[in-house]
Amino acid sequence: MVHHLNLIITHYGYLGIILALTGGIIGLPLPDEILLTYIGYNVFADRLSYLPSLACAIIGIILGISLSYLLGYKFGLPLLNKYGPKVYITEKKIEMTKSLFSKFGPFILIIGFFIPGVRHLTAYFAAINKYSFKKFALFGFIGAILWGFTFITLGKILGEKWDKVASLFAKYSLVIFPTALLIAIVFFLLFRKRLTTN
Image 1 (spheres, rainbow, N blue to C red):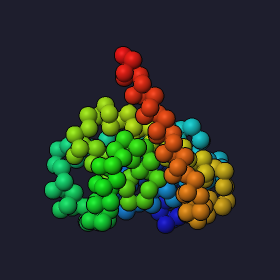
Image 2: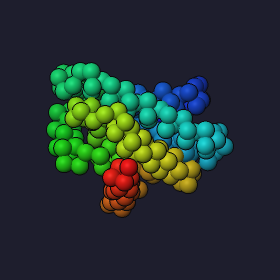
Image 3: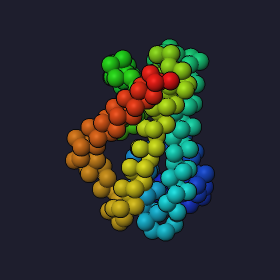
Image 4: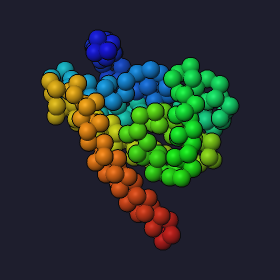
């Protein structure tokens, strides 16, 4: 896995970050958290710069979820049911995301990135649920920034121990999810207040 990630970064540099994350979000079998953390490690090792890496990661994530939203808007659930399993999007993941989205909508667009198997589907379900692109982007792009920043920064901080991110993520997920949810709620309340005052 590390060999493939290294090839992406060595041969394609910052463009490789954008392409890999765009593909990963759409559903290609790429280890997104591991990729982001490895990018952070490369920042630690002075092979990449922090801000350009973060910017390219966020661009890649936003392109991925925007394309996913467009596919959902254009083709809806039938396409997902037909081709989802071919890109490792199982029926179980589809049903779980559908259930979460119907209950928590905007919050899932933000914290869904931190839930394995859900981040690939939130933008798609935003389109299926008739969210305007503006509403989808408002929450989805915030989630993209939080997610990219979290894992690239983790890789930079962990340095040589970057590959421990999976166990650390599992250990602290009970802190990460509520924190992301709290940020999403605060942001949503501020946005709603702004709408009512205009």
